[in-house]
Image (cartoon, rainbow, N blue to C red):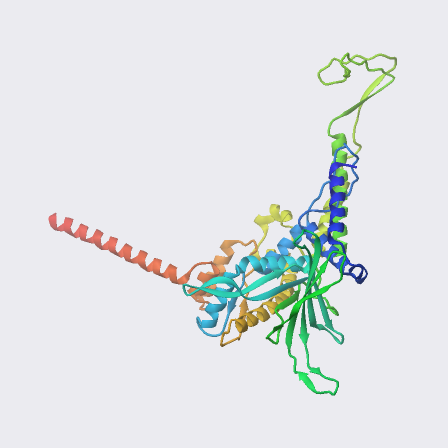
Length: 482
């Protein structure tokens, strides 16, 4: 067993001990769900299983070629590209300013990408709204805004209505922590929908229609205990929102970016790469062998076969040769590349490295054809992610006591693909000359601030006119003098 293999084993043992799952978690599938998400997160980060066993003190030939990370990164990039914009009704309305300031206080571009990565790993993403949880700035004044918390999907569980799997009636957050003495402890928060309550006579004692948050704690080797009394969430919606990464029918949970079969492909590719690496290590230098010859040893224990020694042989009808490979590993390398292609094909991911030699031959149309399947998947993810953002924005506006809670539309950015700028310029010039688009639209497409550029152009034009006038005056004075 090698040092790295021993370290991996010790790390896995520590994980099993630190989690100390309840029997109900083990048999209820909670730990299996937890481990599944953790494995996908580790594979995305490149912490993948070593495919070759390593003997103690021997070289480690394992190679981990992380394509899972590339798949997730490209998917998240296509989903968000350069971010999203929220366009509420009205021009520069009060609600628009408030919502933009709220998202700015929550570091919009950063948290959106984190949310997308979490949902890609787990298949389902979750965020929680904490009222008055973060400071921000609105019209030059410091103000408290709702905080958007990106929840770890490993710690989440949903209970749905028995007759409607899309209707969540309870959100559960459960995680491991430590008490004040440093002993392991579990915490659980249940957010439950409270419906109409009736007594034994059938009389309505609570009309319901709200959510209730209850906290529990489980000290080591003890049962669950409720902490305090339930807290009433005074809204018709819960403080937690979930969404699917990729659509999955007949379940409230979504599909992750990396399926089980994809993880197996990654393992097989790592196994292939590790074997190639081991073969190269053995055959990187010629291995000399002899037949019917004795190679004398030096006094220092070395061999006269060393590169800096004169070799002398003893024997009859002897032979000296080098042990060489019978092939150049072409078939193994092709299989390695094939496994990579399978990973990209199954996830509708584009391997840009294969396009480098063809970039001069590709038109904008052909690039979009190459990215077509990736764009189809992006459209599906934007529908799911966008639906969540509209619900989230509405809830933010309600919690922020905004008068108009119409969330308007979401403006997704154009996908940034490799393009030929000369082709774009020709198309934009044609559309502008034909009156199909305005100069301002073209300016936005080219990432320019139209108003600012118009001011600069006007200023530059005025400067040129001033220079021309001064030049004409100088010429006129010289003419008069002449």
